[in-house]
Length: 248
Image (cartoon, rainbow, N blue to C red; front, side):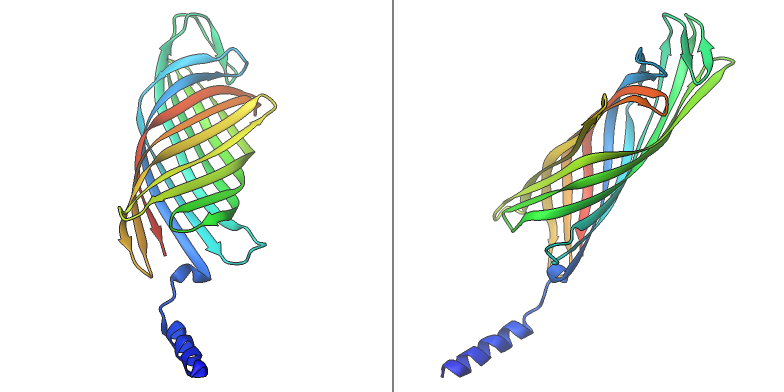
């Protein structure tokens, strides 16, 4: 009788559907971030502040997870950071090899973009609490351009930055809701990069083959560059974002 019960249980388990990420899972997402921008930049430590416009920033990611304990999971994410600003100089200002006289009205265009390569481990992974910890290699590139009535100057940046990575989610049983918080942080040689976000997500689809979550939250990104490719900058982006996350 015990043998029959064991065989019946084994047959039941073998016929049970298996989720796609039992062995390998793919996550993808998109965020739309309405960010206000504050700060300034220069070719020296004396930063020139600008009044920047709010702008919608776009971000995407792909993540690949598996069940091999010793190997980290991989997440790749792309983000644009763009804005336009203006100021009127109280003092002369040199940037990109061009000097602008005091009283000059300047406009500026900020166009940063980066790709993050994240290697992380899932320290906790259950329906109530998820916690990931890892390292980030950030490939930062972009340009800062200043324009006056008859002059223009620009400065490019191309650098790799190392950061720590943390991602956490807390499920609220029976509600379809969860709280989340994640971030990246790094500080070295007078430079820093802090990128933090928190919010709430709603489980729109929850099936064996597909999960879909809608997200709403607040994000704050503060960067300080100290002589990175001859660029000094102190800029903050902050605001509300909405997004969608899909799990295959």
